[in-house]
Length: 322
Ligand code: PMP
Image (cartoon, rainbow, N blue to C red; front, side, top):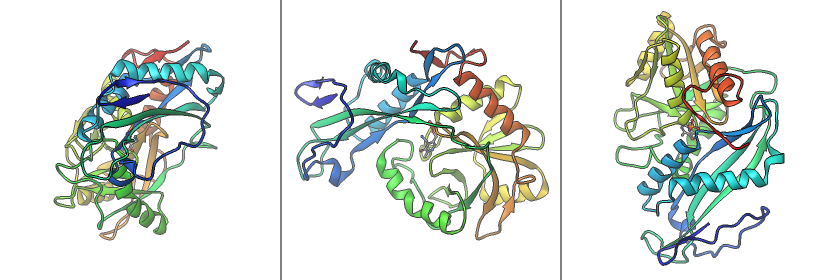
């Protein structure tokens, strides 16, 4: 769907994927005015199909657009664009542990070399079938704490899902891999003390009294939809969830003393991923036994069962397509 200041949203179409003719002076290529989303369409236990919380993605997309000085795409149009694309690609929604991954995005397409919000944009959605994230079962990941780089600063774009945030985080992700770890842990930019999130997932900590802690939405982390769903599910299961700052040194101390028994990361792609080991220049440590904890397993199963229509959906999260 195209946008121009003059015409508003217009010219919606569904086409086969192919190269995009793009002018070298398109504003996005220089000033990175670009935002995106990620969500999945699932095949349900009864044979139907559904999106998981597309309204939440639509709201986050709207908030990201606002932060990046881009035009607002009405929430209903966002959801409808996905419904129509998935209807055209319905045969590509895999059963089993797979899903149809959807990637809505919007970028400044105006041909103009100058620092100002563009007057023209393109909004698109890509659909792509994905198989099981964990082939052969869930495996705990190792994470590396970046002491050098931060992902987002107060007043910056950390809460928006914009490409620039990822551009800034790649060097730290590369360093984590060089250290033999799967993912990077970012700390806050001001004090380099408070745990924020991984490169593409939010974090939860499970204490020995069964309570959960997750970093608060201070504006420098992405408000994950999986994070929000897990908070609701955990509370439903009678668990206490505290959204409060948690320091990296506290994490190490609590893991070593046994006060912290599990940690997991979450996001649309993997849903829930246990964290088994933390590498940090201030001292490495293992979480629990380094395996997958019970709370992590239970929350993962609970959310996965709702997403696939194998359990009741008390929050009305499934947006049925067929
Ligand atoms: N944080 C970051 C930086 C991410 O890229 C993602 C993935 N979108 C998440 C958290 C998790 O968000 P969600 O649960 O909405 O996928």
